[in-house]
Length: 173
Image 1: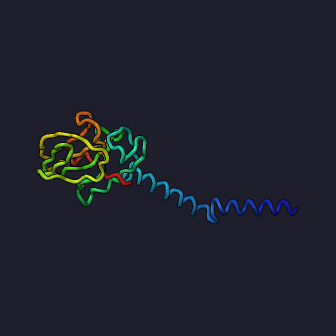
Image 2: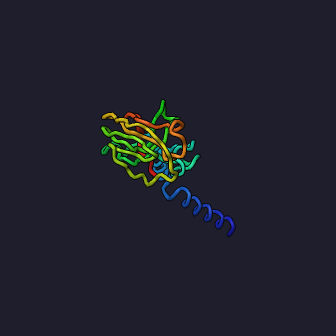
Image 3: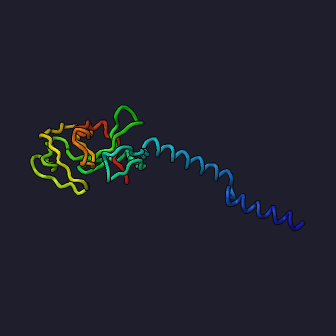
């Protein structure tokens, strides 16, 4: 007799721990939680996996990052922001740093970034480079983007003006 009561008591506590005292309330909480998570995934936070060497050493290859899609709803992108850029769809995106803002001119001379003819510090660059690129004006609804790995030849690096509409959001971490 004692063993039956002990086993039913232990199963009762296990049920309370796993389901709670009010199973209907627990189900409602689970449904709300799952709905919020799916909404966040669809509308706010987008996980992406980094492939390639263009953002080394700032972002390692095969690392997982999260894109905040709401980052630019109330404020424009800023110089230095690392952004996800949509290519043709949501499955393939580039991860780049904004270095030029709308209306500015961007150039590289002896590896130094020049904004409107003035040298601009880039503390996130770890590898020296010897890039040469003539002055290029950024359009009014564009941003100039480039990766952090400047040890690559400029010809091998995807960079340039990017329309605002192709910026998906800012990298969170």
